[in-house]
Image 1 (cartoon, rainbow, N blue to C red):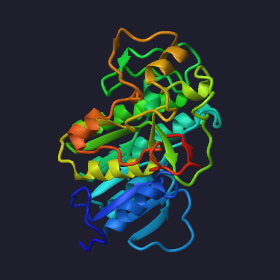
Image 2: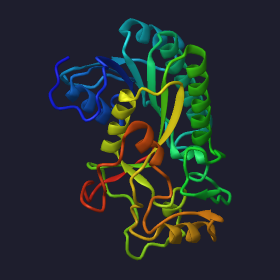
Image 3: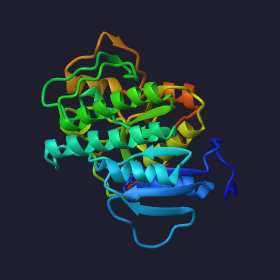
Length: 307
């Protein structure tokens, strides 16, 4: 396989299907894999204009089982990267969002399992329940890791919990490797700034709650996908993808107290350390974040992408 650069993560994927390929996250993943020399088959509801080296695009509605299974069987990829989803329950009717995410994830993962193809897919920090909660939510412990209880009350977080259970079941039934990535709020270097300033922000406002200012750069999400493709773990594993620090530039414990009123008894946070832990991603995937908004790794005008 020809390579345009020295790979950061060494994997043997020659052909990969990427769903949600034209989306805010999918486009970055397509570019990273295609730049590596991987032949990418991107799936989305519509095909993009133009031509991209090492990539082709197909219009597929993933909620339709037949076309989804037919496409994965025909392409016969070395890996499937499933990123397609509806992500904002405040802008989309809950029933539509839930049905879309659960059905599409089931169709893609089962098709991959039947083809004996490993999967990397994106779940969400929303599985823990705080992000779109309308009731009081306090973490059981800090930092929050992959073992923390998942208790969403919104359709988006619930759809991702169902997706994670589908991932576990698929790995068991078909013996494939499935990596579930739970990103924090994703920032893009080419978006509009849409978060509170570091100085003078009301720490009890909804914008700072839920994940207490945890974030991850979209380029680091793409790196996590590639790290997962290079991993040799068996079965199903879930990992958080998150920057080392919160984006508000304030001690994280202060953010938690402002939002929740108190800290959990089990709290081991220092300074601006993220409320979400990336320790498992480091141990399992040899991945650590490369981009930080604070040191200029993310453009000053960047804004959030909900996933």
